[in-house]
Image (cartoon, rainbow, N blue to C red; front, side, top):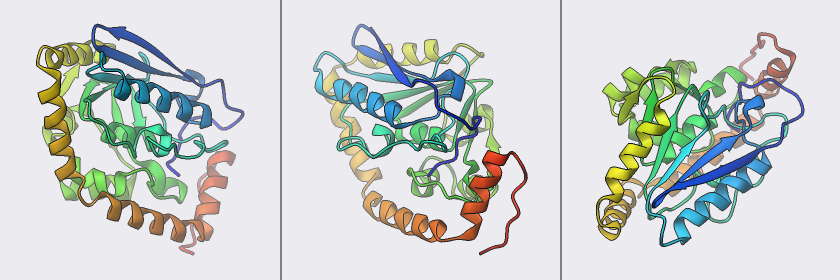
Length: 262
Protein backbone atom coordinates (compact mmCIF):
# COMPACT_ATOMS: atom_id res chain seq x y z
CA UNK A 1 0.00 0.00 0.00
CA UNK A 2 1.41 3.36 -1.00
CA UNK A 3 1.51 5.92 1.77
CA UNK A 4 -0.98 8.77 1.92
CA UNK A 5 0.33 11.82 3.77
CA UNK A 6 -3.12 13.37 4.10
CA UNK A 7 -4.87 13.69 7.44
CA UNK A 8 -6.49 10.58 8.86
CA UNK A 9 -10.23 10.28 9.17
CA UNK A 10 -13.36 9.62 7.17
CA UNK A 11 -12.81 10.11 3.47
CA UNK A 12 -14.42 12.97 1.62
CA UNK A 13 -16.41 12.24 -1.52
CA UNK A 14 -14.02 11.29 -4.32
CA UNK A 15 -14.77 11.90 -7.96
CA UNK A 16 -13.13 12.57 -11.29
CA UNK A 17 -14.15 15.46 -13.52
CA UNK A 18 -13.52 15.18 -17.24
CA UNK A 19 -13.50 18.06 -19.70
CA UNK A 20 -12.30 17.93 -23.30
CA UNK A 21 -10.26 20.19 -25.57
CA UNK A 22 -10.67 18.91 -29.14
CA UNK A 23 -9.24 15.36 -29.03
CA UNK A 24 -7.85 15.73 -25.49
CA UNK A 25 -9.82 14.69 -22.38
CA UNK A 26 -8.66 16.47 -19.22
CA UNK A 27 -9.15 14.10 -16.28
CA UNK A 28 -9.10 15.82 -12.88
CA UNK A 29 -9.01 14.05 -9.51
CA UNK A 30 -11.31 15.85 -7.08
CA UNK A 31 -10.86 15.05 -3.43
CA UNK A 32 -8.97 18.09 -2.32
CA UNK A 33 -9.86 17.89 1.38
CA UNK A 34 -7.83 14.64 1.43
CA UNK A 35 -5.14 15.82 -0.97
CA UNK A 36 -6.67 13.57 -3.64
CA UNK A 37 -5.88 10.43 -1.65
CA UNK A 38 -7.21 7.52 -3.67
CA UNK A 39 -10.05 5.46 -2.23
CA UNK A 40 -12.27 2.87 -3.94
CA UNK A 41 -14.52 5.53 -5.46
CA UNK A 42 -11.56 7.40 -6.93
CA UNK A 43 -10.15 4.17 -8.34
CA UNK A 44 -13.44 3.37 -10.06
CA UNK A 45 -13.74 6.90 -11.45
CA UNK A 46 -10.17 6.93 -12.79
CA UNK A 47 -10.71 3.53 -14.36
CA UNK A 48 -13.88 4.69 -16.12
CA UNK A 49 -12.23 7.87 -17.42
CA UNK A 50 -9.19 6.03 -18.75
CA UNK A 51 -11.36 3.31 -20.30
CA UNK A 52 -13.16 6.07 -22.21
CA UNK A 53 -9.85 7.53 -23.37
CA UNK A 54 -8.84 4.13 -24.67
CA UNK A 55 -12.17 3.22 -26.28
CA UNK A 56 -13.31 6.48 -27.87
CA UNK A 57 -11.68 6.88 -31.32
CA UNK A 58 -12.19 10.67 -31.12
CA UNK A 59 -9.90 10.91 -28.05
CA UNK A 60 -6.21 10.86 -28.93
CA UNK A 61 -4.22 12.10 -25.91
CA UNK A 62 -5.22 12.28 -22.23
CA UNK A 63 -4.19 14.63 -19.43
CA UNK A 64 -4.36 13.55 -15.79
CA UNK A 65 -4.19 16.20 -13.08
CA UNK A 66 -5.27 16.88 -9.52
CA UNK A 67 -6.39 20.48 -9.77
CA UNK A 68 -4.54 23.73 -9.13
CA UNK A 69 -3.01 22.91 -5.73
CA UNK A 70 -1.96 19.26 -5.66
CA UNK A 71 -1.63 16.11 -7.70
CA UNK A 72 -2.17 13.15 -5.37
CA UNK A 73 -1.00 11.94 -1.95
CA UNK A 74 -1.38 8.24 -2.74
CA UNK A 75 -3.58 5.60 -1.18
CA UNK A 76 -6.12 6.58 1.45
CA UNK A 77 -4.67 4.70 4.40
CA UNK A 78 -7.97 4.81 6.29
CA UNK A 79 -10.14 3.17 3.63
CA UNK A 80 -7.60 1.81 1.07
CA UNK A 81 -7.83 2.33 -2.68
CA UNK A 82 -10.20 -0.55 -3.29
CA UNK A 83 -9.64 -3.56 -5.52
CA UNK A 84 -7.52 -3.26 -8.66
CA UNK A 85 -9.65 -2.90 -11.75
CA UNK A 86 -9.71 -5.41 -14.59
CA UNK A 87 -8.25 -3.06 -17.19
CA UNK A 88 -6.29 -0.60 -15.07
CA UNK A 89 -4.95 -2.50 -12.10
CA UNK A 90 -4.25 -0.54 -8.89
CA UNK A 91 -5.97 2.87 -8.90
CA UNK A 92 -7.37 1.94 -12.32
CA UNK A 93 -4.13 3.38 -13.68
CA UNK A 94 -0.79 1.76 -12.87
CA UNK A 95 -1.39 -1.70 -14.34
CA UNK A 96 -3.00 -0.43 -17.52
CA UNK A 97 -1.80 -1.18 -21.03
CA UNK A 98 -2.58 1.92 -23.11
CA UNK A 99 -2.41 2.74 -26.79
CA UNK A 100 -2.85 6.51 -26.35
CA UNK A 101 -0.44 8.92 -24.62
CA UNK A 102 -1.26 10.10 -21.11
CA UNK A 103 0.31 13.28 -19.73
CA UNK A 104 0.58 13.96 -15.99
CA UNK A 105 0.09 17.65 -15.08
CA UNK A 106 1.56 18.00 -11.60
CA UNK A 107 0.97 20.84 -9.15
CA UNK A 108 2.09 20.42 -5.55
CA UNK A 109 2.61 16.97 -4.11
CA UNK A 110 2.81 13.67 -5.97
CA UNK A 111 3.62 11.35 -3.07
CA UNK A 112 3.58 7.59 -2.71
CA UNK A 113 0.95 6.16 -5.00
CA UNK A 114 0.53 9.62 -6.51
CA UNK A 115 4.13 9.49 -7.72
CA UNK A 116 3.55 5.95 -8.94
CA UNK A 117 0.61 7.24 -11.01
CA UNK A 118 2.95 9.86 -12.49
CA UNK A 119 5.45 7.14 -13.37
CA UNK A 120 2.67 5.22 -15.13
CA UNK A 121 2.06 8.19 -17.44
CA UNK A 122 4.00 8.81 -20.63
CA UNK A 123 4.95 12.49 -20.24
CA UNK A 124 5.15 14.80 -17.22
CA UNK A 125 4.56 18.54 -17.00
CA UNK A 126 5.30 19.88 -13.52
CA UNK A 127 4.87 23.26 -11.88
CA UNK A 128 7.82 24.75 -10.02
CA UNK A 129 6.05 23.97 -6.72
CA UNK A 130 5.64 20.27 -7.51
CA UNK A 131 7.20 17.67 -5.24
CA UNK A 132 7.72 13.98 -5.97
CA UNK A 133 8.36 11.44 -3.23
CA UNK A 134 8.00 7.84 -2.06
CA UNK A 135 7.46 8.12 1.71
CA UNK A 136 6.36 4.51 2.27
CA UNK A 137 9.48 3.57 4.26
CA UNK A 138 8.57 6.30 6.75
CA UNK A 139 5.36 4.36 7.44
CA UNK A 140 6.99 0.94 7.69
CA UNK A 141 5.64 0.10 4.24
CA UNK A 142 6.98 -0.44 0.74
CA UNK A 143 5.92 1.08 -2.57
CA UNK A 144 3.59 -1.47 -4.19
CA UNK A 145 2.18 0.30 -7.24
CA UNK A 146 5.10 0.03 -9.61
CA UNK A 147 7.81 2.23 -8.08
CA UNK A 148 10.05 -0.68 -7.11
CA UNK A 149 10.77 -1.31 -10.79
CA UNK A 150 9.59 1.84 -12.57
CA UNK A 151 11.57 4.34 -10.48
CA UNK A 152 14.82 2.98 -11.89
CA UNK A 153 13.33 3.17 -15.39
CA UNK A 154 12.50 6.88 -15.25
CA UNK A 155 15.42 7.93 -13.03
CA UNK A 156 19.08 6.91 -12.64
CA UNK A 157 19.38 3.79 -10.51
CA UNK A 158 21.15 5.44 -7.57
CA UNK A 159 18.60 8.27 -7.49
CA UNK A 160 15.72 5.78 -7.55
CA UNK A 161 17.31 3.90 -4.66
CA UNK A 162 17.78 7.08 -2.66
CA UNK A 163 14.11 8.01 -3.02
CA UNK A 164 12.98 4.50 -2.11
CA UNK A 165 15.37 4.21 0.89
CA UNK A 166 14.95 7.71 2.37
CA UNK A 167 11.46 8.87 1.43
CA UNK A 168 13.02 12.22 0.44
CA UNK A 169 11.38 14.67 -1.96
CA UNK A 170 12.51 15.31 -5.52
CA UNK A 171 12.06 18.87 -6.80
CA UNK A 172 10.90 19.45 -10.40
CA UNK A 173 14.09 21.17 -11.58
CA UNK A 174 16.14 18.14 -10.52
CA UNK A 175 13.48 15.81 -11.90
CA UNK A 176 13.74 17.53 -15.28
CA UNK A 177 17.54 17.38 -15.22
CA UNK A 178 17.32 13.65 -14.54
CA UNK A 179 14.77 13.04 -17.30
CA UNK A 180 11.57 12.41 -15.32
CA UNK A 181 9.90 15.74 -16.14
CA UNK A 182 9.44 16.94 -19.72
CA UNK A 183 8.46 20.56 -19.04
CA UNK A 184 8.35 22.92 -16.05
CA UNK A 185 5.85 25.73 -15.66
CA UNK A 186 5.23 28.47 -13.09
CA UNK A 187 2.90 27.46 -10.23
CA UNK A 188 -0.62 27.10 -11.51
CA UNK A 189 0.57 26.49 -15.07
CA UNK A 190 0.99 22.71 -15.23
CA UNK A 191 -2.39 22.03 -16.81
CA UNK A 192 -1.91 24.73 -19.44
CA UNK A 193 1.57 23.36 -20.18
CA UNK A 194 0.22 19.83 -20.47
CA UNK A 195 -2.58 21.01 -22.73
CA UNK A 196 -0.08 22.76 -25.00
CA UNK A 197 2.01 19.58 -25.19
CA UNK A 198 -1.10 17.48 -25.88
CA UNK A 199 -2.19 19.80 -28.67
CA UNK A 200 1.26 19.51 -30.23
CA UNK A 201 0.85 15.73 -30.23
CA UNK A 202 -2.67 15.87 -31.69
CA UNK A 203 -1.30 17.95 -34.54
CA UNK A 204 0.23 14.69 -35.74
CA UNK A 205 -1.50 11.65 -37.20
CA UNK A 206 -2.95 9.62 -34.28
CA UNK A 207 -2.20 6.12 -35.55
CA UNK A 208 1.59 6.62 -35.86
CA UNK A 209 1.63 8.19 -32.39
CA UNK A 210 -0.26 5.22 -30.98
CA UNK A 211 1.98 2.71 -32.72
CA UNK A 212 5.07 4.52 -31.47
CA UNK A 213 3.74 4.39 -27.92
CA UNK A 214 2.94 0.70 -28.13
CA UNK A 215 6.37 -0.27 -29.46
CA UNK A 216 8.26 1.84 -26.91
CA UNK A 217 6.10 0.60 -24.03
CA UNK A 218 6.30 -3.04 -25.11
CA UNK A 219 10.09 -2.91 -24.99
CA UNK A 220 10.30 -0.83 -21.80
CA UNK A 221 7.81 -3.01 -19.92
CA UNK A 222 9.03 -6.41 -21.06
CA UNK A 223 10.03 -7.33 -17.48
CA UNK A 224 7.03 -5.77 -15.74
CA UNK A 225 5.38 -9.06 -14.79
CA UNK A 226 8.55 -10.06 -12.96
CA UNK A 227 8.54 -6.63 -11.33
CA UNK A 228 4.96 -7.05 -10.14
CA UNK A 229 5.72 -10.52 -8.76
CA UNK A 230 8.73 -9.24 -6.82
CA UNK A 231 6.60 -6.35 -5.55
CA UNK A 232 3.95 -8.78 -4.31
CA UNK A 233 6.70 -10.76 -2.59
CA UNK A 234 8.02 -7.62 -0.89
CA UNK A 235 4.50 -6.70 0.19
CA UNK A 236 4.00 -10.11 1.78
CA UNK A 237 7.23 -9.77 3.77
CA UNK A 238 6.35 -6.23 4.89
CA UNK A 239 2.82 -7.30 5.79
CA UNK A 240 4.19 -9.85 8.24
CA UNK A 241 6.48 -7.36 9.99
CA UNK A 242 5.84 -5.61 13.28
CA UNK A 243 7.22 -2.37 11.85
CA UNK A 244 4.45 -2.17 9.26
CA UNK A 245 1.84 -2.19 11.99
CA UNK A 246 3.84 0.31 14.03
CA UNK A 247 4.34 2.64 11.08
CA UNK A 248 0.65 2.81 10.24
CA UNK A 249 -0.29 3.25 13.91
CA UNK A 250 2.22 6.08 14.30
CA UNK A 251 0.83 7.76 11.18
CA UNK A 252 -2.72 7.83 12.53
CA UNK A 253 -1.57 8.77 16.04
CA UNK A 254 0.59 11.57 14.57
CA UNK A 255 3.77 10.52 16.39
CA UNK A 256 7.22 9.29 15.49
CA UNK A 257 7.33 5.52 14.88
CA UNK A 258 9.39 3.26 17.12
CA UNK A 259 11.09 0.82 14.79
CA UNK A 260 12.30 -2.61 15.93
CA UNK A 261 13.47 -4.16 12.64
CA UNK A 262 11.06 -7.04 13.15
